[in-house]
Length: 230
Image 1: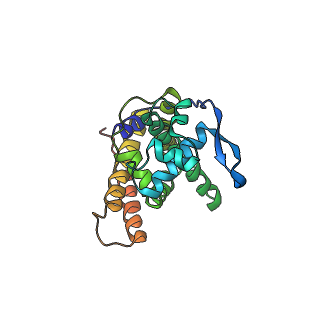
Image 2 (image 1 turned 90 degrees about the horizontal axis):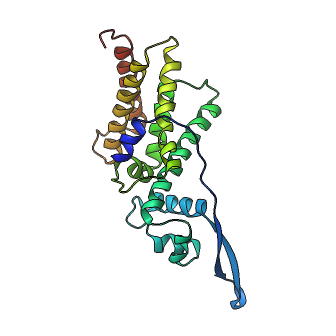
Image 3 (image 1 turned 60 degrees about the horizontal axis):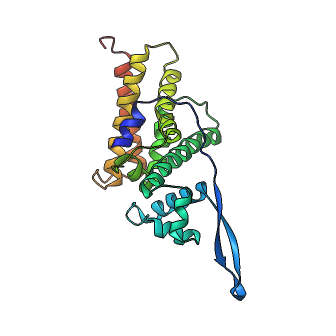
């Protein structure tokens, strides 16, 4: 929930992480040893895919990450101070992958970027396709503080959603209303997706479920855009 609050309240200045490299010794045929290059990015990606495979972070430990990489777990301390730091970096990596995926889907469909309905539909698709990542990003309670570059990544979804609201409107609307519409539409989608992932919704098919969300989002958007009392 802490991550959700950060994402809903920030804006973006991209900052790229520093890439670090070292080597682990890996056994090869004949009993000889071969150096295997490991980077911060490899550690984070490995942890993220372990999370996806296992559906939760309980099995994503330093020892298991190192085992997957073919290194001693102590080697990971060359890059990260703690497992918590890896979790925050992993959150930034997953968010970046999600946004890249959303943009790729728009390009493949050959539709103009900017529709808030298209964006939230793709967000639902990505979340349902990757329930382990969704659970981690939006429902896990992360402790500690993220690094500055991760904080900047956490701002991106808010900017992306607000930009889509502006472009969908096609006319200038007050910034306060943009933020309000973005917040409520995302929060509604977030709630619906959470109930689906945890099997606490109706027995609708996935298609019917997403169609219902889209219908309700259009209604919410229309009511809020034309409500001049706020």
